[in-house]
Image (cartoon, rainbow, N blue to C red; front, side, top):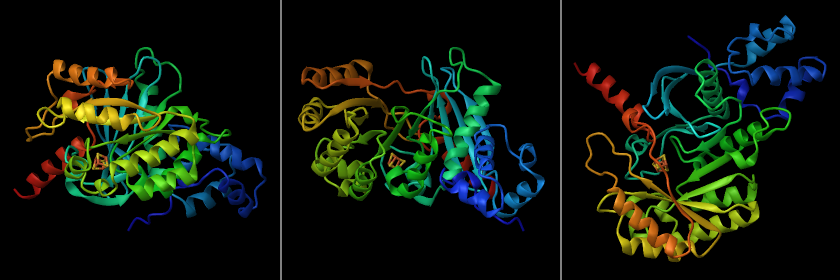
Length: 360
Ligand code: SF4
């Protein structure tokens, strides 16, 4: 039986000094170790050639270096790359590389499944299976970096990247591990990712927003509204909908002011459901209550379901009402439509396929 040990990449920066000290090693070994852990291609302890054999053995006895295996990789016509990774317990999670003009954006998962039950989301279908640990989240980034290194995307030459916690799972429902990830990513001696390049995307559960405010990490925040009033929000996002729009907006505004960044309000445009002018007018009123801007996200259709994005002129009309109301509003292009790039779709497809095979 394979023994599953903690992942060493789950450790936060301050834990490495005490770790090497415990193994009787000089302090500089901590920096050497951390540097190795940031290398996308370091998958075995033996590759850490400047660490003594004894230290490598001690580390290997206590920790696992790898927690993810790539099982599927799809590339869209628009350059979006989607990945399915298998975890050590057999569960799978998704990550996406979204090509931007200069830097890629890595969309990563923080949970297997999700408890929030949002209607428009494939991840919601199977409920929450478990939280990811920080090392499993960080390792997604390493795999994405390694992929870009081996197959560079035109125009994205260096190692700068944006990270959005917008894949599977609700980041504020797994705050303990997500906060560790932020510490690891923003550590000046390590990844050194600017807080400006990191975005937490939330459905807005009250307890989670309160934790975010008290931790004050300074990263960007996107709040999914789900509805233009509380009834709509509850219908589309049943679990986060227990937090009213007024509460979610007030807490988000507090966070936005303390981080010095405008909060993005995300609105999924579904034809005939969330594209009505009166909804846009209500959103204008909501968005005027704090330091907010709006992202409109045309629905990425789920397989076997009828809901779809509205026609472009409807989306533009919706945007115009918001802009005329004085709210900065952007329509986010839906990337990777041909490869099921929206949250949870690839995993769902694979589970269905496996289910069909096992029932034959
Ligand atoms: S949209 Fe986000 S919060 Fe809602 S069910 Fe999907 S993963 Fe969870």
